Image 1: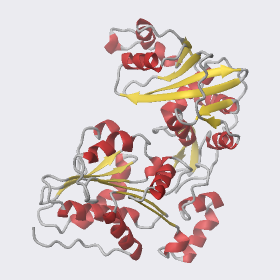
Image 2 (image 1 turned 180 degrees about the horizontal axis):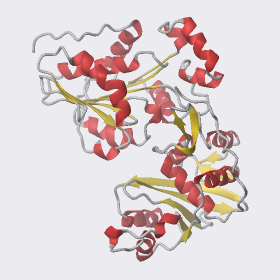
Image 3 (image 1 turned 90 degrees about the horizontal axis):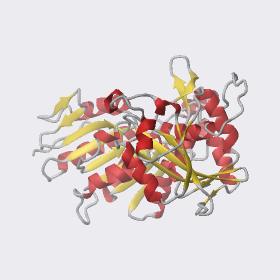
Amino acid sequence: MPNIVIPYKPRALQKILHEQIDKHRFSVCVIHRRGGKTVCAINHLLRSALQNPLPNPRYVFISPFRLQGKATAWDYIKQFAAKIPGTKFNESELRCDLPNGARITILGADNDQAIRGISLDGCVMDEFQNIKPTIFPEIIRPALADRARVGDPKRGFCIFIGTPKGQNQFYQMYQRAIKNPTWYACSYKASETGILADEELQAAKEVMSNDLYNQEFEVSFNAAINGSYYGAIIEDLAKEKRMVSNLYDEDLDVETWFDLGMNDQTAIWFVQKYKGEIRLIDYYENSGFGLDHYADILKNKGYEYSTHIFPHDVKVRELGNYGKTRLEALLNLGIVGEVAPKLSIEDGIEAVRKNLINCWFDKDKCATGIEYLKAYQKKWDDKAQVFKSKPLHNFSSHAADSFRTGVVGQGIELSNWKKEVPVNTNYIV
């Protein structure tokens, strides 16, 4: 292939990133807003794809949502690859086919089933702080395995980019990279890079809270998640040392709290109670399986169950299941339980907030569920510039819904909860 010049002149920071990413198979880059990380990542994919000697190289750029990836990365791919002779763009599939047989595709993490089973030479996970934590270890990491070559950091690589959102999976990945000499970790604040003018940063400070500014421009992992229903409470529980290991007590029975998805995730909390304490000892979530799969999970956990608490819609009849309800299907599988009453989401959220102060968590077995609860937040209305009264539906919803089902199923005293549910009301730009 003749020499190809991509119309891209990297900034000083982008040059550093390219040099370091070339030397490491896995790179975690925490970079402030408008720092040029997406442009850098797209051009790194393009160069790697063009230089890859293997047959049919495959690369992906994964955003939390496919439409988000289209808005943030697709135009960059077309801009920088447009002058490469023989390049083809597929708008409907957000796919760039290069003349050497390489392919770069924009994907959304919201449809993780569409990502499974692929083989990858390279991957960028954009806004990783907003991506479901299980996607990398369960889907992307195996996809990179058969394209790796010993001693060659350019094969089977992954780049994680984003800005902080509390101490969630992005923070944990960053800490892992710091401790692992074979990984690359970097953190760049707006006050250090000089990319944004001082007057622009000062203008941002005037309209943003200190926490929000420090999170977005000074890449602080210590700010609370904006709009989070439960984040501050869970952080307080951690400070009170309510996150412990080996919480399970074999002398106590276990109950489960379910969220049963149709074509979605099914989430289960495993709970023990003792003298007013609510002990979350385990958490399980999966998708694409029938109820028999979850019956096997319950059996294989080896717990003694006192009851199972299901959401109210478990009594809805399914036309594709001979008119049976899922409650009937569960009974046929030997899973006998209770159905939580139907409450408004707002009432249920307030009930969870009142009960969280009595909770203890197994920090190891419930690690994913804890992060999901912290990430459960109000939906932002871009047009009205306010938080909506309903929660954002994303990867965290199922853990939060199953937790709410369990709390509501305890039998709570209803109050007049017309007032706003309190949240951290800063918004991430």
